[in-house]
Length: 288
Image (cartoon, rainbow, N blue to C red):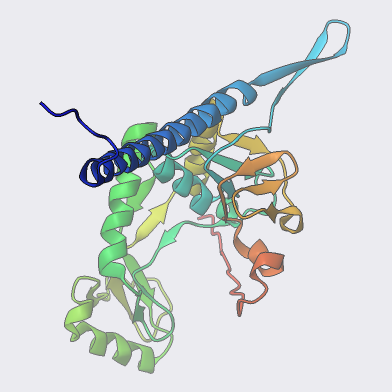
């Protein structure tokens, strides 16, 4: 039997092919291992550094503070409705989040009435994508009620009082539009309007109600604290830096950052290219 000659043209090509395959397999395996190792290090870093630190300020007196040196996937600025619900959703999908909030200073969500309106404005316009958004909102808030053990969503029709004859005619035209069928009820009866100075009458709007925003935000704040996902401080957007891989602000670091701080976006240097147009809201509280 002739000996196996590695340097033969046919055998040498086969050997090179096998070596290239093994090399590619090794590189792929190493990449996966490195990625997994990096994630494990970040997880360990998160748990290790985001613990309560006790600092002795004098003999027998300690203060507690949370260490902000953590490495979440996503940094969320603001713990209003948007920031809180975003953190809840991302955490449910396995993302590590950290919410940074300055204890609701100037938070619109704390002042908001939480009204849910389906048909709005002087011209009684149907809210954009309401057929999609309303069921999603209802499902989310009912789910939060079960998870948090509190009642949040109060669904009830709204009586819209017409300001003039034109608005009443607009309401009647909308009633004939199939797109409005689920959201516009009948005009209010004289009995329903008894005692009200409304010469042009009114009509019922469905799919409406209100959300108890303050209990919701308080419950989600406790949830974030319990999971060590909340840092109570303020961040200046001008101090936020990116090296292309990580977002940094002071001692905070994350893979991504999402600003959920409402009207403050107007002064955020990262969004000065956007054509902001502020909308002033008004709330009238009546004690009867």
